[in-house]
Image (tube, rainbow, N blue to C red; front, side):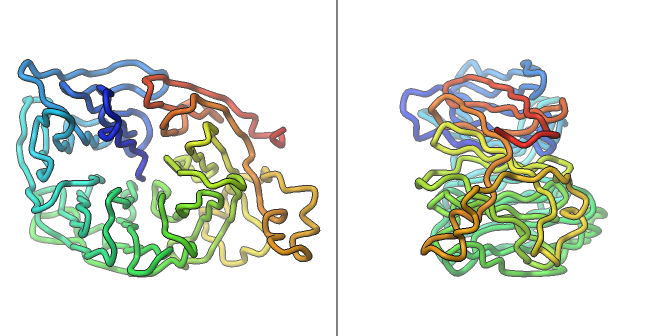
Length: 359
């Protein structure tokens, strides 16, 4: 799951990076002078690391709640070189390994089995146990945002990244047994292309177990959810009619909900129930909740008017207003709650009613 926020381009901000961990129980904050680790719900500072001689952290990726972090230097005075991923053991505390590249690192994703690193033109996958290179992918077009996502469950290793054609997503499933004993590399089990959008994909997220993929294009008006196993489209949700930049998309760990944040200052929550017409649904989708997302009362016009698909779309089950700044969202530990971390330093928590249609 990719739920991170790169703030290094925001001049004057001491916060360089914010990211939730794999199960959304914590989030890490990269600063110009060190990093912080917070418990997500309730929000509380659990750990801080400052350096007397300074140095910024442009990427701080946690591995669940353990002491191992993958960090990359950033900011005005980077603690480490921006083209290196440093494996930091905070129990010692010092770096225990490093991976060097010829270009600046754009994104890092971790699971118990592998580490994925994106530079602008390539993606590299390494085995977690000894940093042996497992796989690499060449991007057809530059990927300046480091767009990619990685599943977090133990039953499979699923990687998603931009495909070779505009609007396509490359999805690769790896044999998870290769991530264990030394000398065994994870191997590709399935490689598929998801034809997600007509315009370039700007955001993507995998469900925790890798069974579902959510995507959004650079228009930011439509969110689509696909079965990873079959590449069948399971859901199509409308965020709005105006163009938007999608900041984050997050699946609930059970697959019941999807939360989306954007630059319109609104958090949208969608119900991932089974829908008529999705005959080839995954088991995960079939077991999801049965509360429907609202539809337009004019949906009968969807097959009549030009652009009528607007009226036939499913809309968000719940919406929340947040400060008008960059933000990422996740689900809280309490049932039916969403937490939001904003670039201005604010933390918000909202509750929605899962048994009643959204008003």
